[in-house]
Length: 165
Image 1 (cartoon, helix red, strand yellow):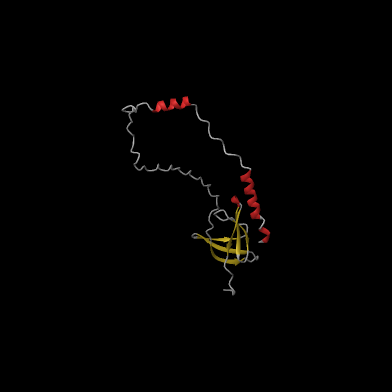
Image 2: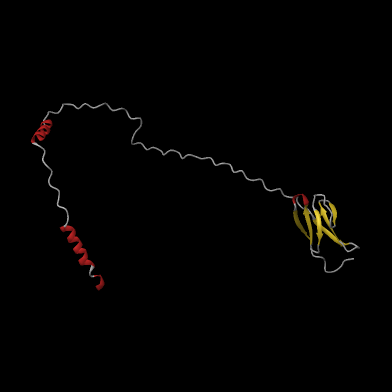
């Protein structure tokens, strides 16, 4: 606190210096000559007319004190958004697992139902809906749709743990 005691005397000295060196007030205005003052007083002493001439007021187009509804906001119609057409998709793969068999040469043959018909799947075969069988594994059949370069899998159920004859 002792280090700030110099602030109060400094502020007082600056205020005293500003008061001492302030410019002197302006001198009173010079009076107008008597002739101009006499002319102004003679204009004031003229008699006033009995009626003042004023132009007639026009009738108002509306009541200035009536409540006015704000203008309706401008409605901007949204621009229709042109949605991009969805990319083409391959035909649906409507297959239902019907069974499997191991051929005498060791190749796998999977039987599937397509609607009311049963089709056997073997590697390299092309199905009626355009899909081609690429590979047959224990749990999946890999299919491709060549026109669109689309690959998919058809999952097979697990083989039975015992053999039925």
